[in-house]
Length: 265
Image 1 (tube, one colour):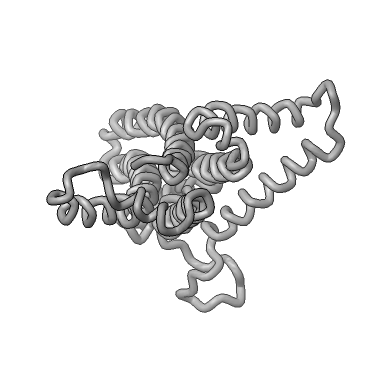
Image 2 (cartoon, rainbow, N blue to C red):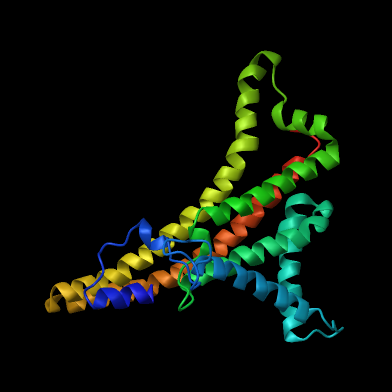
């Protein structure tokens, strides 16, 4: 975003920003001119994965009875997800899913935070591909957990056949199928994508809008300043959205797993 702002300040960029601002060029010198196989977005995903792996390995390399600050923070994150998401949503059986939920929560949170970190200032989750992959992983977990717990036949029966009169079932079964097996991964991915996409676009509009008004007329300088003040205020709001969306994504995944393990529809 800073780069776009600098270009606009020199009078070389178009305004308003558009969807093309989310398609970044390749950052490797040997990539084709229009190659998107390794962009800044891809690098951020690898950086996030590397940070999480290194941090948790370093925190638990030499665990102590009286934890260090790193160990305390790592244990606090895991304890929060285990107790407030896994156990609260699923019960004691949720403990075995806590490592995945913790990984999911931390990864979504960190990749979301890139949206407001200087020099990154865009979240990989503002590209629909990344939320889709995360949603598909959670979807597979939901299916596998249900089949392992009930068996394939009972899991499908519990998922598709609600306790209702037989003559209504021809209407309810297709609805239950679409709701459980089609809409769940779709809405899980779109919710995260839409919030991060919209947040980045709003910050772009106010940041670049300030430069656009300043370049258009010097008398609009106070309005430009107001636009940048709004950018700062919205950044704090975006920070809250970032945390909330990581939590919501993890809670919804846990709720789907809970539904798969439930004995009744």
